[in-house]
Image 1: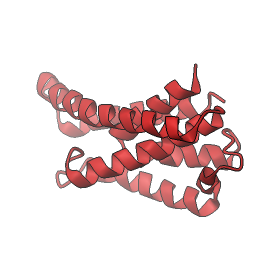
Image 2: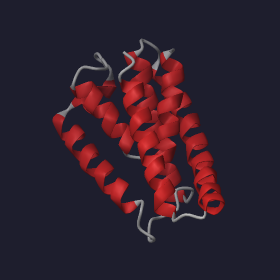
Image 3: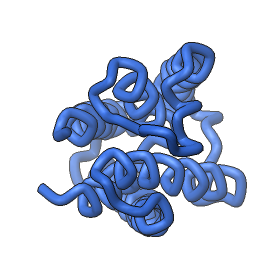
Image 4: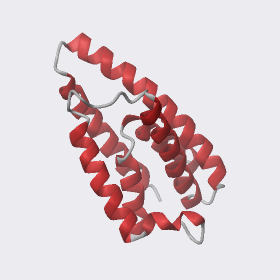
Length: 155
């Protein structure tokens, strides 16, 4: 599978959960699953980045189930998803020997699709299945974790 498609795909997963895919990308870089070479993105492999992103991802997975969780399509959530989607997309593209800029654009586009598409899917599934929101949120977590792991292990 092409690394530019994977850059787009990791962006989609960022649209679902803003911090889980960056944590996976950071771990993958630190474990040498992906090679960021001498690019400016090599900071993603640093131990502090791995630690911070992992803690933030775990907190996000918990906080998303709370009734007080902020709206992912709100300004702050959308901004975070766009920036982190671009960052993750750039990392995946560079690991696949493509331009970081092309990966950033594809990651950004993927994050927008994942954000709004994920919101619509989650809202509609909760109504259609008549189940609590957290049930669908857990499925979304599983898709994001599995999908992110899939992307970072393709190299």
